Image 1 (cartoon, rainbow, N blue to C red):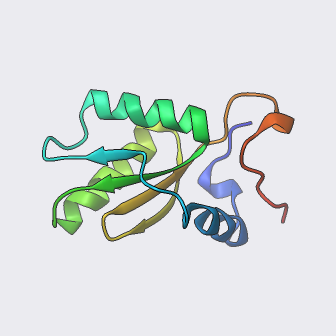
Image 2 (cartoon, one colour):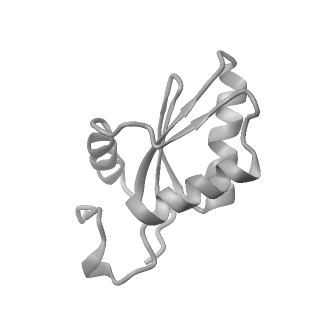
Length: 107
């Protein structure tokens, strides 16, 4: 089941943000930025967990926003939240809906 940002309501995004609050970052971007290896790691973690938190090094807000948008575009994930150096992404797994790790509430 593929979801796009247009298909999630504000309430559903809020639910995902709440679930992500207690997560630790699974991917950390260093000074090299968003490399192919980092993208592969993000893909791997999205497939394994569906909802992930990414930590970005550096103080450049514009660069962090660009990375946030680029990850969303390249992984087909939903951009859930961006606060400070923490980025949160969601992508439903390609498995059967009943075995999904994250259950998004209906409207």
